[in-house]
Image (cartoon, rainbow, N blue to C red):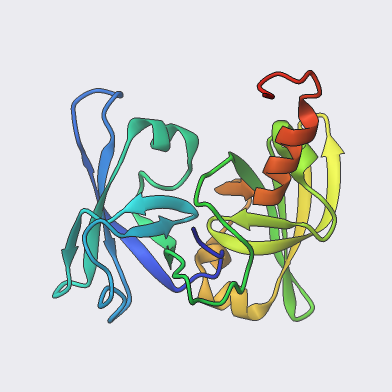
Length: 211
């Protein structure tokens, strides 16, 4: 589990194929800030742009770790198959503060950035989310964008999807990789965990699966 509070900005420095066909995944090498891996061991979970991954090799001298991403994960996420900056978050410990909201690290869909522009002292981020995720978006509700816990300020249902508007404070822009987003960029979205269970409980009234 995670909180959506980014603990470091890393960089995918290498992407290597695990096989010769599209059914094979990729092995990523991620460079981290100095000291970031001091308390990380092989097998630990780290969220990369909001997707929960497992550290399979750690090179503390180089400040990097490796992870394997399956073809399925690559198909359902964005930005995990290319070199560039990524948001990092280590798995939540039992005594940690829950500064954002409960995040599973499971990407529910990929959205498209419509706009990122400074408005006053903050930045306005507009994202077009897949239409299927629209029912999970709510005014002042929580959403995870590339692993960052954020608050939805506006929701507009469109024929092409669901447009959400988010306000980013300067701290978020400067301490995550969101500041590098441009119009057209694809981002990983995770809906609020509570909304997921409410939909499951209220969406099927037939009684199927009940004892």
